[in-house]
Length: 211
Image (cartoon, rainbow, N blue to C red; front, side, top):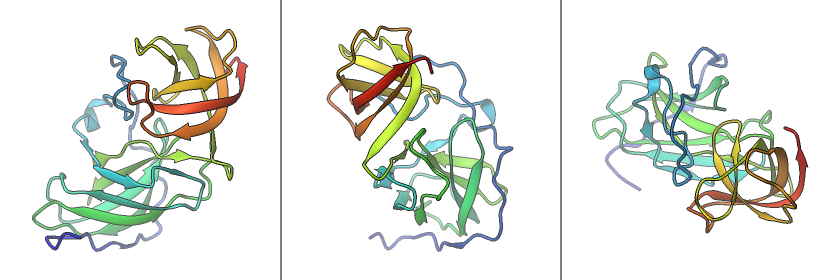
């Protein structure tokens, strides 16, 4: 554990969901090597990458360690969780010192479900976002996820799904006659950093056309 600085997080006051933060995807070239969105609207397009989220999958209630040391110095920080194209809830607040190191222990909210991933976000003292994580895959109790999106050809030599949050997944299992352009809902177990272009992978057990 670093002795430079560790954010002294305490439970946040009753901070409402930050629905006004414009975490919305802009058009960007496909990039299956990076699971986080490539670009967001101009107000936050300089967000830095939160370096570590452990674990990166689990059901609601999972305790997650968030750590990064690449953020600009701030007098106060807030750590939140939410989904792309939706609001973010501030879970904790703390202070930051000279090295920009932030460490937080947060719990995946009970309202999270297996239908879409969450991301963790760090705000400064006035709730301007400064850092965002790779996706945390919320699972059901059996370790399954459900994703809705479109079958795509990412040039990786495997069947891929780009979901409604623009994350790319490599699909395996009995995929029948699925073709690029098909709108689908898939369910299956998830593996991080799979063998196909490092995209997270879903071992599909059920799928239906028409998202």
